[in-house]
Length: 214
Image (cartoon, rainbow, N blue to C red; front, side):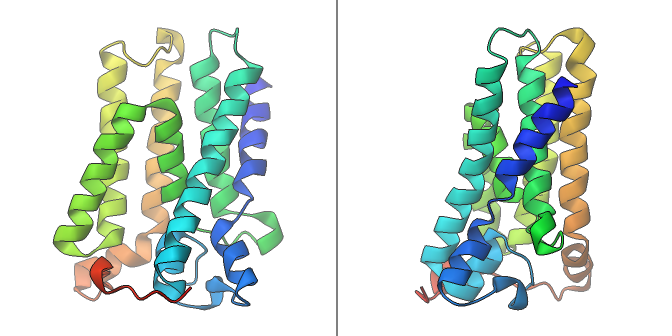
């Protein structure tokens, strides 16, 4: 019951579609432009730097807030860390599949970044550095997104096996499972990008050439 509550809390916060809301303010439905999703990269390409930054921050923070709320609700519970992970999981689901937008949202990378920031701040710095490095070197945001999700799972397992997750042994593999599902969900959401990467037709994003459209 507690797990379901945490997922619901996360999902409700995840419904705050920053890119979609910002686009509507500009009289644009970004889901009808570019890649067709409501995430950071499409906001960046469609509306420019300002929109991209605002969308990333908003989508990241909504997950941070969801996790923080659950941490407060279960402050005395020994399973607080696990429940917080469920909240983050729910926020990603809400972002990816908002019911009021016919379940057509983003791909969950910024929201997952918020989860990492809330639960593992040092890990967030590493993940952010790897993401930026890959984007600057290859100009493929999709490749960087997939890479950091795999890195996230790897680091979670390493920390867990080292006793650094503050999760009981009984809940450890459940925590791993949530991280793995998040990674698999992100990879699935990028399935079209993966095909284009393999075919050499994926769109590149040169951050130095993004216009100030908004």
